[in-house]
Every structure is written in C-alpha cells, then in structure tokens.
Image 1 (cartoon, one colour):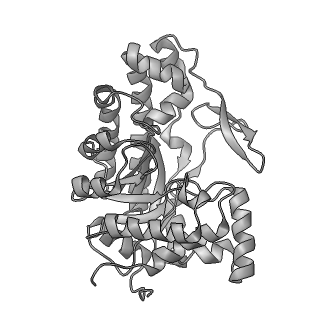
Image 2: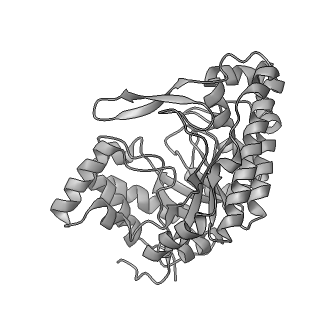
Image 3: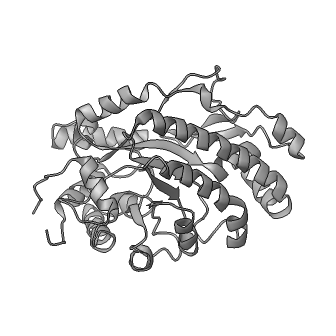
Length: 361
C-alpha cells in the first residue's frame, strides 16, 4: 500500500544520505531527463489516462531539482560552450543529439597551445542571483537543490577529442595533466563562489566523469589514480568545505573503481548502469553501502525501453529492497529516458517507487 508522505523532499534526501530509511524512497532525475519524443508520448498518455501534464505529474514526485547561477560572461557563438567546444545537431530520426563538431585543443602539440587557449573565468557567472533562484525553487515545494556540473576529465577530452586524450594519458601525461589542472582550477573557483553565495541553500553538487564503458574501465586504475583522481579530490574538498555533498556520475562497468571513488571523497555514486558487465546491485550495497550512497539504477538500456510495466515494477522493487536497505538510496533512471520508451513504463517506474516500502517504519 502507498505510504503517507510525511517529509519534504529535502528532508527525505537528507535522511537517505544519512543512511536512514524514510517515509518513501527518495526519487530523482539526476543526469536524467526524458528525451523529446518520449516526453511527447508521456504527455499524451498522462493527459488521456490521468488528466495531468508531465510537469504536474512529476512535480510532487521528484525530490531533487537543479539550480545554477546565470551566465553573464562574454557572448558565445551559437552552439559553442565556455570552453570553446562547438556542437551540432545530429538527427536520430525522431529527434537529435548534440555532437561535438570542433574540439579547440585537438591540434595542440604541447603546453604552449594549452597555455594560450582562452580559458573560462569563474567571474563570467552571476552568483548574486542564486538566493532568489533558491527561494523560487523552494517556494513550490521544499526539495533538495543541486548545482551542476564538475566533469573534469570529460570537459578536458571535449576540448581535446576523446581518442587523443586517451593517447595523451598514456604517452604525454604532462599535457593531459595541464589541461585537467586548468579545468579543475575553474570548477574549484566556480563552485566555491556559487556555494558561498547560496549560503547553505544548495545541498548537492553534481560532478562527473564517465570512466567506464559497457565492459570495463576506460583507463587502467593506476592511470586514473595518478592523473584524474587528484583533481577530483581537490574539487571535492572545496565542495565539502561549504557543507554540500558530492554526487558523482559515471556510466559503465566501474565496480573496480568504487573504492577509489570513495577515497577521493564522493558521497553519492550516480547512474548505476547494472546492464554493464559485472555491475551488481547486491555486491555494490554489501561492499560499499556503509561508506557510500547511490542514485539511479533503473535501466534505460533494457527494462524501461523493452520491458513491460510489470518488469519495470519488479526492477524498481528490487532496487529499493537491495539498495535502499538501511537508507542510502535515491531511485531514478540510470540516464536519459530515450525515444521509444513506452509511456506506461515511465509511469510504472514512478508509481512503483511511490508505493513500494519493504522496510519497517
């Protein structure tokens, strides 16, 4: 039977991150959304079956929402980010994805080019607007607030190109380190200024780096520990100084890296791609659940797009029963819900999360 909700979203997430059970499992869409074709199908389904819009359906369910400072820096060319990375729309039929079309450091042959690159400055953002944005977010409902996005290795390879960055890590550590060091410098200053301006109003900081693929890690662990981990450790330390917690995203098969991720100071491991090799929710909870919290876990590769609603409900219940034992779990899809995902499966995920509570009160 559904449990009566007695906590705010912010309280619910805070208790979960303290490894305590709550009135229901916290629910979030961290590093996850609903791609436009699936969102259109969901909108039609909700209007027909429940008389709701997607927004009015999700608003009372989702316990974490995003707030960010406003960009106030120099004008950016269309489809160009603050790092100088350019993207273009690539169609997949029903919609499109942003794909990198220009990596500004792709041709860099040494540190001179890295030093000469126009690096973004943390002063390009307006942090004074954050208290107002925080108040607006909480005026709807008191939810956990999260700021985006410290992806150090990913930002670096966006500028360099993934293949070339992987080569650099193996044969030119100075160049790889030099790029990541400058990216980290920016993120440390950015989050330091944002969290100071928020005055305790931001609870979570989203950081990321996809360090795994479907079969294993992208890099040997010794390379990760030497070249990537120190930058995240520095960033995480700066975040923790403000009392916020770090939620870290990585896709892929990353079980052998979890100890290292805990060592660099992450609080919440996000994505939980259990369809990847060797990813096991039982083992993850047993081995690391006393030192780490989790978010995500409902498969956007298998169950949501290709299962039936009953399959989705079983997976949701299994994730809650295993990962939510004793607290420490926030349920959500493992990534963006893709085009073609049945709307009935999306609502089955949220309905099951709201209704299933296997733990004693």
